Image 1: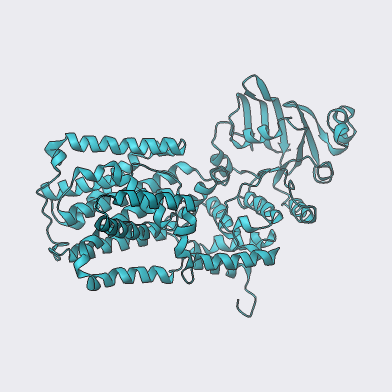
Image 2 (image 1 turned 30 degrees about the vertical axis):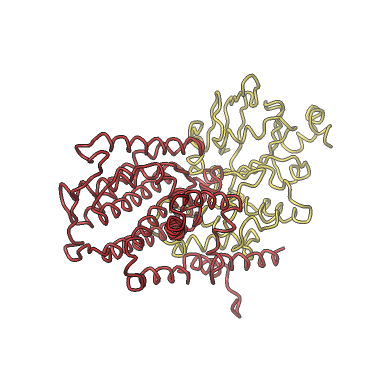
Length: 343
Length: 248
């Protein structure tokens, strides 16, 4: 603390600023991600995959980690975005940034339209309704072969250079840069949202809906809004996959994707936005490594790891980011000390 | 006399059990009105009806003359009705500062602002700091709520309700569970509430009721049993029989 005592207002502003301040580990993460372009040029494809999965998981964190809504069908929005981007590029306009925006808008609208399904009810109801929506879309995509290519997938997608300037190369370098820029921009936006009065109200609804209502908060609109944003994010992630691979497989709507992204978030930790990104790195690297050393049994190991995480308590292992300098853990220790002083 | 809060023939049944039986109650503006009654008299049900947690089977609730019986909780709060809970309803790992930023921000209609940063909400932060200071929480404003001693949490519980700048404040046993040595702090803050705020106090502690309230309503078996000034109620032999007799 400084020499002269701070007024309560100054202390309050200081605390609020600190909560929204960039952490060292955050900056480091982004710098490392950028450095990868030069350090690991042969790994661009898997890095792109991580980036896309990371964005998908950030999207799920917005509804699960901040608003407390569980979903077992989040891939509905991811798959919808992928199909929209693919069809849009094939039939209308092949510039990717435009396609990305279109996919985001369409998925967002679909999220808005289905958000009433998650407004009320228990976690189990939400799991089932979201699961149902994803199944429904998967079957529609499968049946509408004239539009989606059905079980064969959507092919014939050609993507022209990004903004007419940067072509997708064979090594996936520009694809990675493109995906990374999108992830960075959307994470910054999400970061701003969760540190706003709106973000605070979401966290409050998750922690204590009864009291939140008693402070005049109407949960309905807040949840609809975040669900719509998250759906748009997931749609953009799906569009990135369609654009960087020039193909949309019916697999984008498969159940395992909804399950994977939930697993990614459990590994990385919920409610601090970067859990999705850390989780995506760990999950993808682990899966890659396990599938090399035990090609037939890697699912076994993933399953075992999942059980261990849940048994040990995700908080204990996944909040490892908290040990990084200047992070929440250091703050918490300080806070505990302050609490003892108050006593 | 301006009436701040009124109920007309309010009825709430749970199956065959009538928890609130034809309650007609009128609280004048600026009153310190205590609601007492033995356990199971229907005090909490009445509070839940007033705040919109439960819907009445029949009857009306009026706030400043406006019918609010069918409004959801958050809309009633917006019209100036606020409450505290008998058992703290707080936000876990939120700090008192977070909680106050939330309560004041919502009152000011900032809750939908997704692009503004909390640290830029200067006016809200200043008010939050001032209110935290008034509630002796300024030193602990950055500490997670769950780490605070119970008395401090109780203060935060009341401060949150005050932050909404209510016209009518329902206090549900404000000193419940507070250790003896911290009790004084909580009670003195309750007494310091601004005079224009109408306060309805639900309380078991008769010393507190008699020292705080200017009017008392007695509930028994869901119905309004007696109403009057402190002097009238404390002398009423029937009230003594059903309530004070057992307690005091």
